[in-house]
Image (cartoon, rainbow, N blue to C red):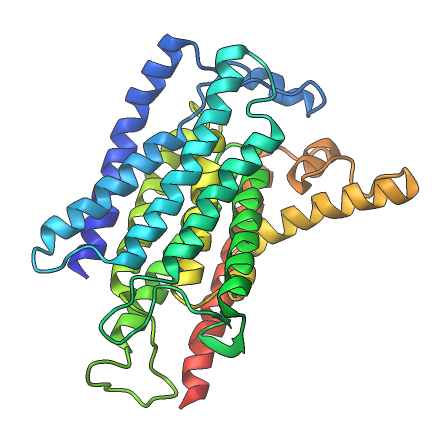
Length: 356
């Protein structure tokens, strides 16, 4: 637990104190957010707000993880945790390039869609391939070839099937967080809640491990390799998110940009894959799922009927056009995100109890 607390504390402090420094640097460079003309008119006041703040989150997470292992001198970084951090940093780099092109060339389009997709694909596929290797002393790799819910379900995907499944999952989660990042603090707060859940999941799995000498019955114990180190990663992300949220809450002094949203989506998907809770993520990240579905429904319905279901998609912008204040939407969506996280943790614990 010392490592978990150290990771969260260091990431929180670096994000909280480092973000205003980043704001001054970005303002000096003129790296301000561009606002789409077809969005809610109230967003025009946000034009010029510094973006690419997700880089602070990434730096804070890496520093928090490093600090945790300086505290835990007898514990070395593990393959699953390093691979999840690679996924976060890799997708963050793709997002950074997208943000940089937008602000440097003063256009709403950053990386071309094919280039952005290629970058995301390379990082996601590299993670998936690495996750099937680097076995521990039991022969367990960071990721399983079986589809998992709260633990492996027994449904085998095979190596190729897993790589495809992991790619789709990473792309869906990173784009889901990206779509949610439309109001001040919304995605940051929701992502922090999901990562808080993964802190609890990682700690619980580590305390109920099947090896080396299980203290709980086989149906209840977990085979997750290095679950405590994954909890340290989740704690660092949680701390970084909440530190950044101090400056990202309405009225936002800085935006995370694609740098942050893609990185956060990637780390959440990576944690789900390596903790063997892939399908549980649909519940834990229920807010991201709802917002993504709203876009799919809007686009699909419009193509079929030339009519719209919502005034605007993603869903949070529909409520803006209905007349809800931005802060009201964010708080209510945070409540929804919290309820989904609570439901996911409840299901996680109920499965453990029922296994008895």
